Image (cartoon, rainbow, N blue to C red; front, side, top):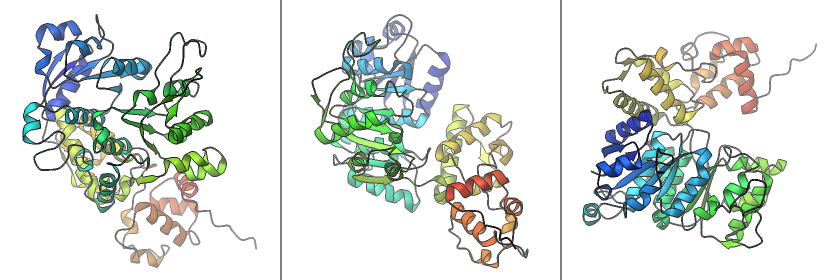
Length: 467
């Protein structure tokens, strides 16, 4: 069992992180400052130190030197992202930005421990590999997915990960694009180097070039010293650019040079620097369509889209939904010190039929909310508190219905029809005989939601002929 030291001055974060790690079979000790940790523990006895960057007294980076060969993971708020890059220059193994979700933290820890295995683990199982022969970074260890669509994703990741090919991960928000990127990194020879994750949508447009490429002293107002960019910090490892579709045009041109020439030029510098970076990008937007409108460079799109991994939305993963829900239920229950929560039959039916526009992230949030609000141990549909405006259901009245206004072909629909396909089929089959209000009532949604889904799916309203 790996032993981890968590150094964090905020009690709530420290306690929550300790419970999360202990639930995932790690032995955890905690400290509230550098001095407290060093006074109470021998840092060399740990397999990993996780520390906040800003602590009372000495900064968390002080532990990098005191921990010797023990890897140190730095936690930092986004406002301190530049300091995190500096921390890696001082020897930190990686950094993780607050707020982080549990899966992100656990995946980062697994990645670090795979690169820095315990001596016994190295002798018995080999670095980065479990006794069952499945690599630590295998996507099946990081992501849940028994359905054929996810198994296809896993096979593709295993095939492309060992190469240095640029990968574009496509998928709706909340489908697990960052987890897929981590799997691509862990199964590559670059796993001993960091993976730097950047959310392009979260960085102000005025700072994006400086953050990615770095800058020289005096390059712009406020540039009091030279800074290393995130691409340079990822040298030797993997750069994961999430929400790549939000990258402004100037940064797109600079990124294209990195892909073409393998070099960067800091803002304000006349000298280029060579970098060896494996590029993985992700987006929920249609980049191909954006190239037609001029929002995204066509040459950059083709450079990024060498190999594409497309993650299916949760509504198309019927075999996985309940397994994911039960896993989240178990995790959230353990966080609250209760492990006997269960889903009522009605709640399971709701989870299986809800559309999940926010995908896995929305499911996790719904389960967490239900666990917090539950007074007993049974999760009911009311506790899930799902927004019926966002999630299309297949109403019971539409299945095997004898009502004359519904098209007879409705009974002949295939059983594996997705909810999006169902919506489109139902509207096209019945819009000639039903008003918008009637369509919305039959689908169990508002007229506004019906209109929005028509726009998204490209289903125009039937024109009423003038007599």
